[in-house]
Length: 73
Image (cartoon, rainbow, N blue to C red; front, side):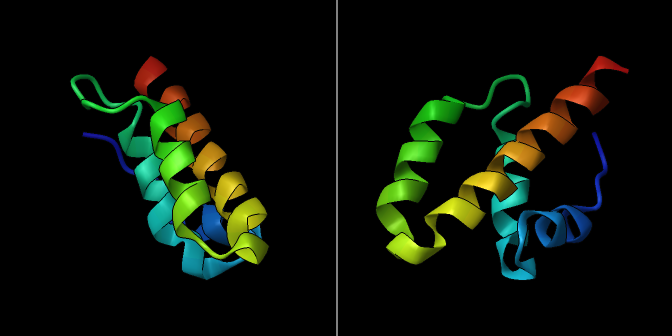
C-alpha cells in the first residue's frame, strides 16, 4: 500500500483533471500489474483529445515517478 497526493501531482502536471492519470501511472509500478507503462501510455495517447496529450503524459510520468520513489522505501 502506498499513498501519494495525486491531486497535487496533477496540478504540477498542469491540470487537476488529470488526477486519475497520475493514479494510473502509479498503478503501473505496482508488482503484478498486468500492463506495461508503455502500453498504458499508448492507450492514453489514443484516448484523450490531441490537445490534452501532453498534460496527461506529464501526469502519468509524475505518477510513475512518485510510485517508484515510494516503493523504494
